[in-house]
Image (cartoon, rainbow, N blue to C red; front, side, top):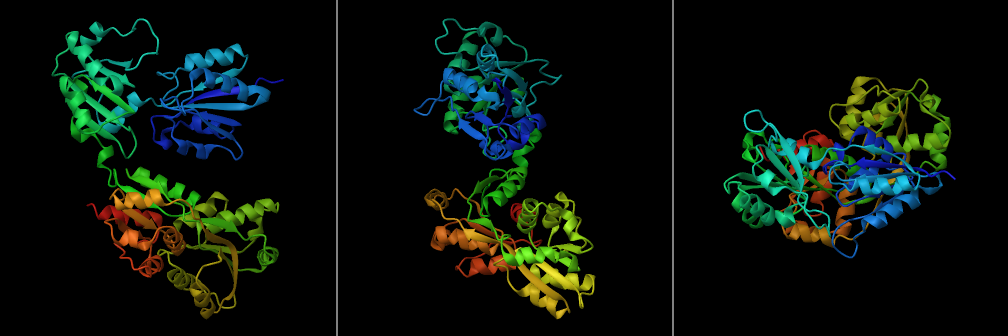
Length: 504
């Protein structure tokens, strides 16, 4: 029987898009993914459907998993020819206990590969502007564990050497021993005025930093409530120029922004928010349900060659349509000579993924403007137009195209179904002023949100409301809410740009 294969993958310092290309690649083919507390759960989106996902936190508490248990799990899951990914925070070879795991799987006769990741000690430099090496003040850097193995009789840390070290010292896992670390360095001759910095939640929108002389860094962290996971930097590098810290200058840095689409849409939108330094908080308000099993859709599909224009009004519609094509053993060739229109850039981009370049994309992304601009773009008199869209879409586009002389077939290929779940945690955050923005990208998201959270919760608090466009704004206003901003360009990017303008 095959012994399987284990990939030991570095998940990077925290932010999900900082994983390596190779790391994402092997996650996609794993039969089982075993991940630790410091690996961002968002990376699990790379996992294939049906993969076995196991969380193994190595922290204090009842849910903690021992290293021996993890070693046994790796061997068990790799048996029978299965591919296992052991996803470890940072780089697996930097304080990652990888030697113990390799020893166990090697003894079991299981082959493995190590996929490096960006270690937090490197990422902290990039995301704070603290240059660990600089020819003006530091030509060397050393990484040190702030917490040695339990039960170890003698320390391998040479405090005397570190106290005289003419470079930058980076401690991992040292928050619980911060006072001890500072004390040992000072005791061994390091100046108590040596610059020190502690950075927590590195690469996340919740990243925070405390700076102080070595003798006072512990008090500074306690005063600012800086806790683990954190990196400690000691040496002249810690006294860096604040202007080099680009990350905290991003327009939405640290802003807590609730996204209220479906799970897939929220994940996509979250990536845009993260890129601007914001902290996305997903609250799924609906789920997309395909209607492509209907006789109406199947009949329209057989008549595709008869249509002059095929119209998509959302990325969800594109995804659902091509999923249905795949199940029926068909592909983009069904379009034949028909021209294709997409309501916006994102919908057009989704089409392009399936090999279809939209013939028409409007520059204003509402149904009314879409219809008007399409009629200005080309004559639709006596042309057959097929709309593939949501069951709950308004009739405005159909009426406009019919007035322009088109014979319109409107086929619902999906619908949005309200998704109810626990909302107390979000209501509490809103009540405690821990949410900066609620974003709404469709009337469906508005209805789904307020079926779960009462509108009074929003009205009585300081949270701001952002709408993607006039139709969504009207839906919000029907609940008695004031819309703080409406996107000029009715897209998700336009929505974020509108929020950014409020901070400039």
